[in-house]
Image (cartoon, rainbow, N blue to C red; front, side, top):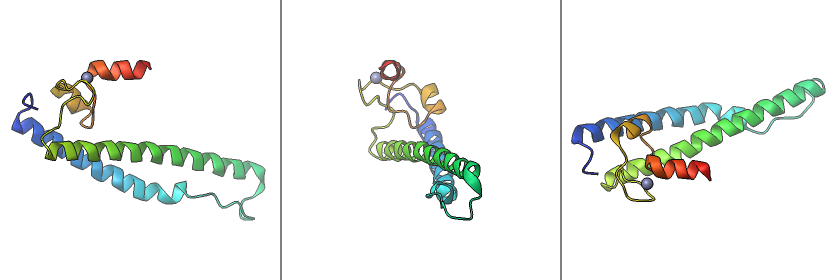
Length: 119
Ligand SMILES: [Zn+2]
């Protein structure tokens, strides 16, 4: 990670910590929304029941995404602590600072990422 200055690393760490906080909060708030829909008499008719199930499905997939991103952020923070941050986990090349700015939890360089996206 010689390609990143102390200052850049500090900024990236701050960004990671902040996103980590936001996601943790988001997951806590959405917890009840993702919980199993109660299909009891309080639901009137079939339409509102399907509505509720659809909403629950959306809440679950949003939570899944947030949880996966949280996991990547935790890995990035761990990599920072081990001085292994900013290197592509596939080819070991340095990940450019602009890319890390846009996505501090990125674990692949642009080349490996676009190859992974194509698969
Ligand atoms: Zn790579």
